[in-house]
Amino acid sequence: MDRNESAPGDQVDVKAIDDYINAKMKSFKIPGLALSIVKNDQIVYLKGYGRANVWRKPVTPQTPFYIASVYKSFIGLGISQLIEAG
Image 1: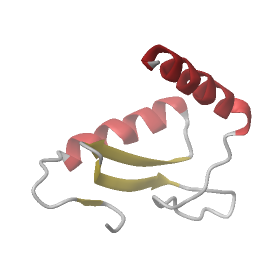
Image 2: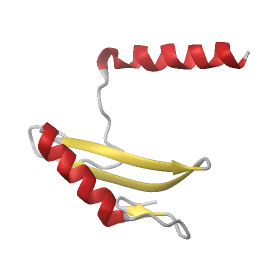
Image 3: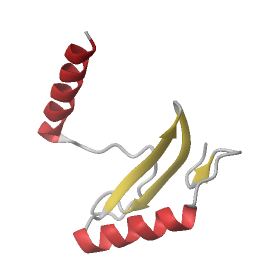
Image 4: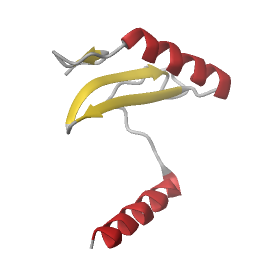
């Protein structure tokens, strides 16, 4: 699937998504982000928004982002879910 593309047969309101993301990026001063929408284990929408770096390279769905120590929260959540699931 290419940048800015939704999967065939899936109803994705691209304009509503773009309007929402662009408004939030502006209000929170977010320079760039990548968005993926997943439904039933299938990627139905991918898009990059804004700029990835000081050289103003556009964000794509494949742009790597450094998450620093944020990953610890995701690992903790995953472990908690595994424990609850037995």
